[in-house]
Length: 379
Ligand code: GLV
Ligand code: GLV
Image (cartoon, rainbow, N blue to C red):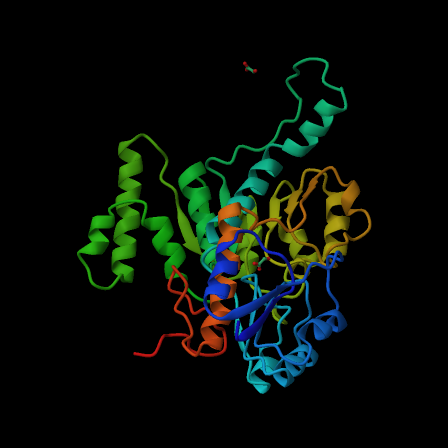
């Protein structure tokens, strides 16, 4: 192979490996036992010559690593993740390194975990499982593990991008929840998902999907549900995040992590939520003030939370692990076989495309695989 490409971790599947090897790459996969590689570990992997790196969200891709990669002749880096708060894109720009991520392939899988946590919290699945295994079940009782009925309740989505929109669709379509969402931007994606459940033919007969059509479709869907003896689902875009927190019964967080979303859910905002609300976080840990959350869980035993991510990953803030009203899983939202193989393939294509000089238009959902430059193939 002509090009030296490094993957800082073994990744699922073989397609990504074959792709690289077939295209003149010498692939080196780091098999160090340690879970999180330090900047120094990665510098030594990069060495004197390295054309591209596939890295992980646990690694700190800043000034130091991009300058090392650039000195080794590297042109491309891809995070094997959609989130890239671990990557300093400005530093990458400074050293002329293209940066990729893996959007699209993990949307549905991640939304399904958020839905799983919502249901598990509503029906107290983990507590009930522990009770059963502890041999405490000695007969059916009217009060045993009574939880919340989702149907007819309101689901709140904060951050209505790809994942938030897919989650909204699942909860609205699957469980007939009403929807309130907040995002800085009106989300045509979400609105299309929510309303696209009915009369898709209408969309096809119009070249541009427009607002009037969206509202028409909602009305049509309402009619459809009424005709079938169901309560119509209602939905709206909130004018503030606080409106979502006050009104929703289940709230799922899907923003990107940056300076503006750090501790987005803090003590004051937790206090705005209903006493029996459910909060789900499959985005990034620091979006929630975890110390404040532990206090809130202690003070409000009926409040429940489902967390995939933590502020000081891999650690939990003191007390969180003991709370019965918290469900905690180790950052596995994108962990389906199909998705993880897809992420690996997309990450490999990101790096390969850049190295070979024809950045690959790789994403099935029409998403730019590169964050800091156009990745369309030359015309
Ligand atoms: C996982 O957290 C990702 O950002 O892909
Ligand atoms: C519960 O098991 C019931 O039959 O109501």
